[in-house]
Length: 314
Image (cartoon, rainbow, N blue to C red; front, side, top):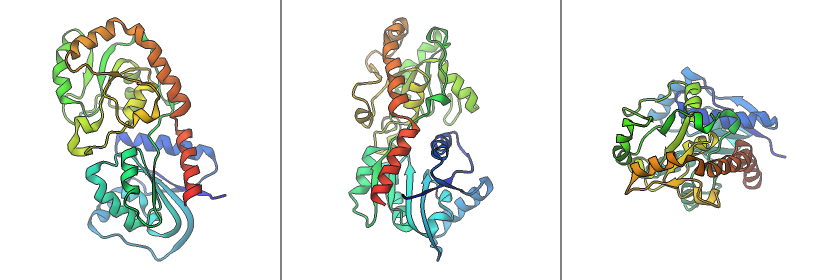
């Protein structure tokens, strides 16, 4: 049986990297993988600058290892992906269309054998390139519901939450709800609503409605045409929020029903008030989402999926 070697993330420069640590924690807890430490915080910053300025350097050493990296930060590859190895596998989210050329170059330079992307469209694109000794697969994001909380529905004090990069067009339509509802959102670009992981967990657990819209709608200049489920949808489900938003294409393959309430573009404020006035009617959907998430879209499932694919293809 193949033994896989996880290159463990040893720094956390951004809140989104919590996702990597959740994923890696599940891998490590399995106890069947070898684990090696990736670069630390200071080294990561230095290596990132070096990688930006210098062409790829291949080390003249052979390692009989099946290395796996979680996350598309090239400093994480150092030094393990610079060796000639039995196999190199990479899982990444944010495989956006404007990044395709850079990702393809990375695959070829580093000799990556298996790419797992969190978006179905991206995996299909890279497979269509027919790169030698390479294959891409769709392995979506996930959550561990044990890491999240939920406050009883009628005790929640945040009516509407829009985390991260908001959909400005929709935001401007619904902003008047602030007059009589509690609406939390990013006041300025890049501003963090909840300053710590603990505040974030409590804040989302304290929210009734979570607004989630795919990035290809909110920021097409960043994502291009890629319409994928992001961790915010899953975190909202894990916190038993009702998701109000737009359904990403990927979500149609992950759920055999519509797990969200689609935004009413013609009457957005009226829709929010109607939902809150009749919130009990949505609780069965929220509870169903939570159970499906817990049983089918957890990190254990994703790790098993990756292992099966790597044993078959590498």
